[in-house]
Image (cartoon, rainbow, N blue to C red; front, side, top):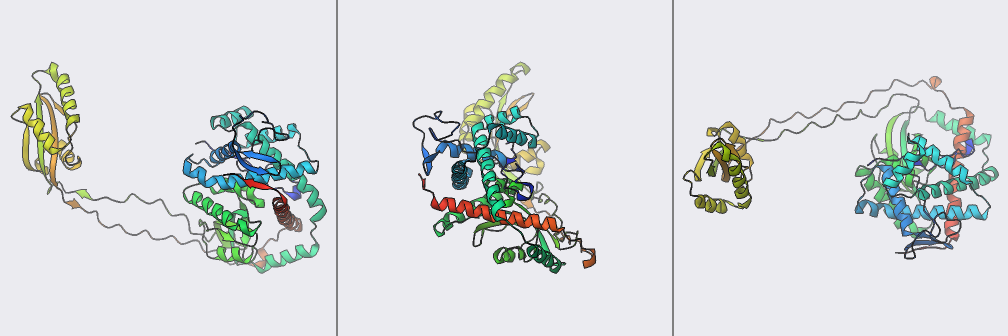
Length: 481
């Protein structure tokens, strides 16, 4: 399946919430029939089933199905009932969140012109190295309405504008906070740091814990089945790094909370964690690389070479014996070979067992047909040796043609010793390179502006999560089965 990289950007405060960092499958729900401001209002049939009610608006079952199809397209995953079942709870939760964000934007008088939505979709097409018509054609082949993509882009841009207002009012970073980060960076020189990506699912109230945990476990299972971690992070993660596939960059010991720090200390490059519970929700971590802080040399072992095909036992043709029977159908002339072959094929298809073979051999009345006795495989013609040890017991062989006619063989008993391959030497692990000693004087500290930007992003991400959590808590949300 062709995959689609679209967008699901977390706002980037330092760059005025820059629009549409390359990211997730941007899929948006189509509003339900007669929902306010719905681009699809009135287009759905009267029998449309409702998946959820969010305040005074509904999310239809077709909205959920369209989003799932786009998620599968983004991840390049196989569309199956099992995969859909794993993705449905998280897709529905995301649709509910987006509806709450749109409702809050409307309450605050925030709107996004259609022109900006079209420009954003154009950038999505460019990120996927295609034109707008090609993007629309790709969506159509996967039965994903363009309105699904338009509506999520609208929700994304509306929420970014809402958050810009809050950020300007509430996010202030002092010099002492920047100083503290710089001191922590100096103290971590030589300690392990990890190149980490995460999927984060928030838990807003205790009664949601079990549901969110199951959603996180489904995503872990999807990754372990071969799903694309970055694509799933872009689609479902609620962290600031969702837009970049969950990328957290290089994380040093002590930078995360205690639960995540403890989990990271037990992981190696390439490992995926089980869901880790923190005070705010569940995190799934992927360690992409590891090194001492201050070094540019990875301490992760190099990737193992692909396993060589394991040698299989071979039949010992010198000692193998078979009990074989045959049916011979002679051809009186060269011109009749084709007719004899057709007769033999029809006969072969009617044979179900050795007893059936014997009965049909007697009925043919050909002296050469019948039991050939126990034969040593090595005494057979070279072309028949592999056939004798390979065809299933009690099943007729393919029709064998010669200038004299057609032959059908069957093996009813077989004694074939096997020759075991010699034991293979265990591959020796390749040690990771040893990084050179780190001189603190050689460490280039990040500029204060970069640290301030990172702190603003962290603070803004926390603020956005709290804002959305409060919207969920005060909203009327009913999920229909």
